[in-house]
Image (tube, rainbow over all chains, first blue to last red; front, side, top):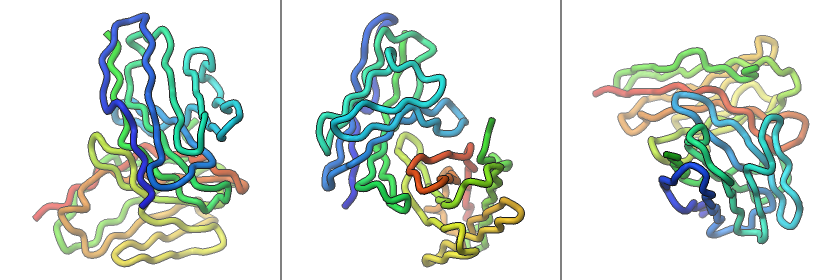
Length: 117
Length: 112
């Protein structure tokens, strides 16, 4: 149980285009979903936290107009990188949590490798 | 400002021996700690966690030790197996929230 999927697993796009990444919890309802990015040999950095039906909470330094997050249902959250540029190339990982208890485990998706040319 | 630090980027251990991965933190508000394992091109997988009210938690071959006064925790894997070869991330939460702060990871290689 507790499977989280991401689609696509990798994407290459031209500079200036927008890319949408989907995150789905397959066998549980995710009250909260999280979006992280990871640069090579670096830590996972939390970008934003989203709760179903409400606006996402962005971490300091993350542009909310550039990284649009939608959490329309308890099993789906999307991250749209708008007007992508080469510096947005990274590994984007989502996670989902079934509840709000701090001991609730976050289950991670397999990640999406974004390359912007 | 790296609040969770894993100072060893890599560790090599022989099969059957003990692997000890270390993690230090600076934020005294952290009260829940987790270890995740990550294979290349995959998301992290939860391994084991510990609350700040405990100093040890054990699950099979994995044991996590917490030293609050030193703001230090460690993950012990014994006996180490080749399938344990992966990147291990230490993570921490604070004040009842569910935001995770990750360390930079330690690449563990278990050799035959």
